[in-house]
Length: 344
Image (cartoon, rainbow, N blue to C red; front, side, top):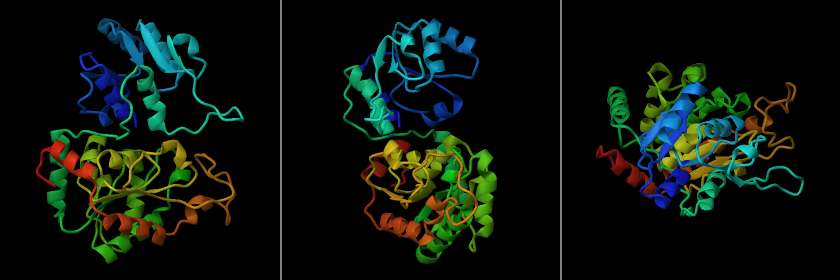
């Protein structure tokens, strides 16, 4: 969701030397991209990161994270201008400060993350009217995805549906494994869909649970492969549809122009509006939600995790079929061209 901001800053500073500083996983998501000249990995060694930044003599730092730690690192690195939101008691570390909006009760007002970040670019006078997310795919990851597709004998004349049943945020965000399995089985029965199950290393048991309950075989289970964020991007780009919880891969789909069904439970979609016409959000209103909790706080019983359990597989499949029947996204064609593999 930060990519529109990076793109806007590049347009505003076309001749600047631009670097991204981030942890390994965010760096992997944002690599490759055409807007920055290098990516500096924050490996947790604060002294090493500060030294690396000092050697670069940066003139301006734009802070996406709201943390005190991120602002402190930039300040100790001697960056002249430090732009960010006044959050986490770090205002004194910034030279250019943006006060986040609040509602009448004094709480932070709901503002989609894409707009929240783009305000940073607007402050610098950069063009910030383009809210499209974008992601790049490396040739090696693209080739690995093709190898897996060839091995699984994937047919392009049948829908390729990637299902993402995990969520690093916490179990409250996760649609039950048996219901994901039912969704997959229904799409196989009705659409002859070819199912890909995604799994981060820590989510392999979740993907395996979905596969175990399914009545039909999956085409590819990434829990059984050497999965990575780069490979996931390549697999998403080759899919016709993603079905996911409210988690990171949802944004991969939109950034790659792939239609996506997102199942929302305890979280409020307004915080993460991605402005993508080929997304369908499936959720139900419940008295206790959206609670934003990582785990359902209610005791076992009819009301426990009702924000997810009241969503039927048929509701999810209906949204999926609507997208499968919709005209293809024009952004999909754009990303296929960027991938240079000839698949349209």
